[in-house]
Image (cartoon, rainbow, N blue to C red; front, side, top):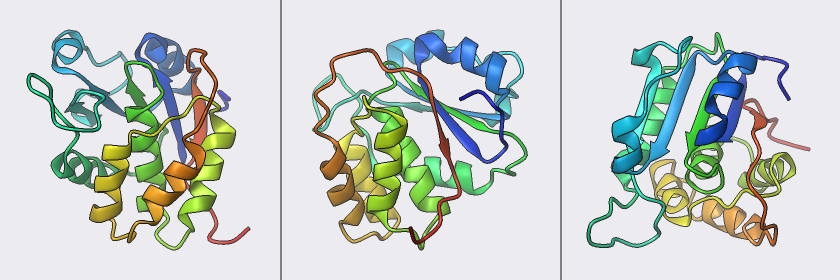
Length: 182
């Protein structure tokens, strides 16, 4: 997993960030965590602060008092950040558990960077890479809208979402180039 490749996304829970940074040497980082965690979050050494996108949100699927629900603005910021990525070093994506927000972000990124590739192919690749991935449906829904995927991202994520595994997420790698066929 830790053969650093510039065109790779590394996805992990918050407690594995330092390990992944040390081994994969990412040049960009995306953190999707709640406000309480974000206040204490520091950018790891080796990742330039200006290349650390911080998206404050809770892992919820519907708006709830006292919580920040994922929004279209979060997805737009994520896509804009990744479209400016120079592909010179890997990207690290993390959330608190490494299961929902980060996997939804990774799915969104790969779909955005591969507009001609079938969403089901990308979702299957995500599932093969992480048996615990449960992409946040609210984030995926907004990504589907922002990327103009006409419900296909939603359907693809739903097709892989029924993971019965109740184990902690482990860091995993996901290629950002996915061929349109195969």
